[in-house]
Image 1 (cartoon, rainbow, N blue to C red):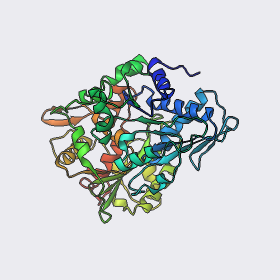
Image 2: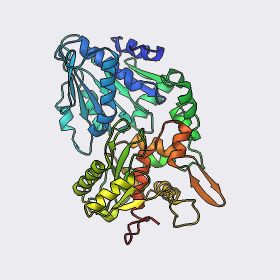
Image 3: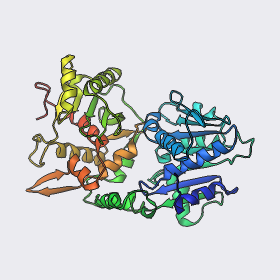
Image 4: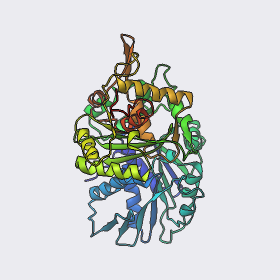
Length: 437
C-alpha cells in the first residue's frame, strides 16, 4: 500500500496546479524522488485516455536497471495488475494501459543521436526526465519541447525532472534561480532532505559515515560545497573530464568486477586509451548468473569491442576465478586482477590503492576523460567519492570494497572497481604470466 510522505504530497499538489508546467525534484539519495515522479506519471496516464508519456534517460541500458524497475514497482504499490490494468512490453520498453495510454522509456543519448532526430519525432502529453543532469543540453531541450502535443482529454502538459544540481546547464537553469528566488511561476523546485528518506534510521546513520564531500552533497544538499583539499577525488575534476571526443583508433581495455556476494553486481567497464567509454551491469544485485554465463558474456563483449585478452582484467578473488577458468578453457587468457597484490611503488599499501590514486591523479591532470555517452556516470562519481583514505608508514591506503560496504551498510563500489581494473591493464599488466604483480 502506497503512503505518501509530506514532501511526496507536495509533488502531487504541484502536478494538480494548472499553473505549473515544470517540476524539478532534487536532493538526498534514497528519498523517493524517482518513485514519486513515477507515481505522478502513472496517475496521469491511468487517469486520462490516450496519454503518451515518455520517460527519458540518457542510456536505455541504465533505464532497464533503474527507472523501469521503479515504474514497475510503483505500479505494484498502486495495486495495478499486469495483463489486467496494464501490459508491459519488455522489447519496446513500453507500458500500455487499458485506456490506450502509454508510458514509453526513451533513450536521450547525444552520442547516438547527434541531431536528436529520434526525439523530435515524439508527440507527447508530458514527460519525466530522470537523472536529467546526465543529458546533453540539446537533448534536454529537445525532450522537454515535445510535451503538450497529445492533450486532447485535459491532461497536463508537464515535465517532471529528477536531477542532481551538479555544475551543468540545469544548475544554472533551475537550481541557481530557485536559490535566488527568481524562478518563473510555472516552475517548481522541490528539495528532498534526509527527513524525507524512506530508509531506516540504521541505513541513514551508515550513510553519514561516508567522506565529508559525499555527505555534504548527497545527504545535506550542499551543492555549493567546495572540495576538500585532501579529498582523493574532486567533483570539479569529474566535471572537467567530460568529453565528446573519441579516438576510435586507441587501444581498448576492459575491467570486469565479478559479484562475490548476493547483493553485489558484476560490472564491466570499457576504455579507449585514457577515455572511459562504457559501463555495463552484467548481473544485478537481485539476479543470479553462473560464472560460465558471465564468461561467455564477457567474451562476446570483447569481440564486439575488438579488445584483446591481454587488455582485459578480471577480478580474481572469490567466484571471479570461475569466470577466468572458463575463459581459459576457451583459449582466452585474460589477466587476473588481485586487488591486494603488491604495487609497483612502495608508496602504496596494495595494488588497488595504487591504481585508484593513478585514476584520481589522471583526472586532476586532465589526462583521463569520461565520454559523454558513458552510462552510470553519476553512480561512478558517487562510488569514487565514498572512499576514505589514509597515509600510514608513508604508504597511501584506500579503503577496500569490503570496508566501504561495511561502513556504509549497503554501498558496494562495483562500478568504480570495474573502472580501475580496466585502467590497470594499461600500466600494471604483465602479459607474460597473465598476472598482476
